[in-house]
Length: 115
Image 1 (cartoon, rainbow, N blue to C red):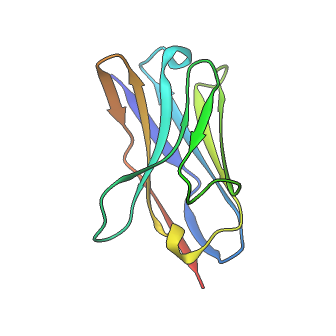
Image 2: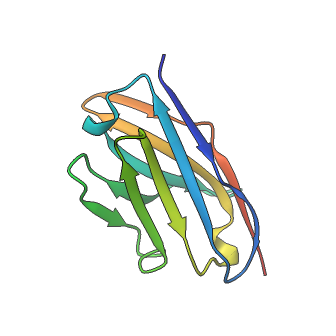
C-alpha cells in the first residue's frame, strides 16, 4: 500500500519560514519524481516545485528564490523549505510521487500565512 504523509504545515506570519516533509512508503522512492502542489480556496491546484529522481529541480515562478525542494532517498522523504512566506502562499500543500503511469498523492498539509 502506497502512502505519502505530509507534515510541517501550520500558521506563520508573513516573512517567516516553514519546512514541509513528505514521507513515502510502498514505492521505490529513489526512482520517483517528486512534486509539491498547492491549492488555495477557489483556485485550481498548481505545481509548486519538482525534483527528479536524478535530483534536478524546477520551480514555479511565484516561488523561485524563496522555496527549495530537496529529497533524502535514505529516508524516503521529500522536503519543501519555504522562506519569505507571503499571504498568497496560503494553501493546502500536496505531495505527489510519479513514476511512469503510477501517480500517488498525499492527504495535504495546510499552510496559512498571516499578514
